[in-house]
Length: 222
Image (cartoon, rainbow, N blue to C red):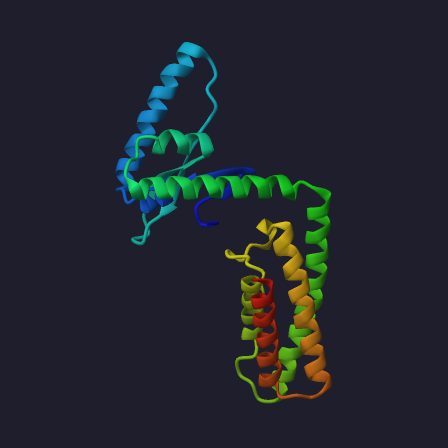
């Protein structure tokens, strides 16, 4: 669901590209509809005064390397745009987008709270300790002949994010419950690495045990 909306300048928005993709429409047609709404809203603004900004012009780089125009839109802009989209599939995606906007707006409110900020601060402290432990594991593995030990930084972080259900890997957009799971998981990783090195286990065995414990935690948390 996180792929549907994003935070941009502290506002929850979605992109015309994603809307076109999910609603199975040509992007140029979606752009045409947006620009018609912009013209109509401009007329209303001249007649009735201020109208809230709902669409923001931006650019994206296509596969051919060229930059093309797109739009970001907030909840109101999205609602206006898709009002005329019909069909069973369109209804499904309208509901999904409403859920995504609700979820991200709730997260935005949560991030402004002291408990979230304290949890994120603690998460960063634990992550620093975990990274130091992974560094020891990398050096330990290299001393045993590993040529690819540096991959553990990415592999272990990816496993931790997955078990904590942080789908996009952006921990700054994690909810309180996700941060709580992440703190527990990274403590598990920290203990597992330290214990394995202390027992002088083979580096592959330490990594395998870490992965198993993370996956077990993810299963139990689920």
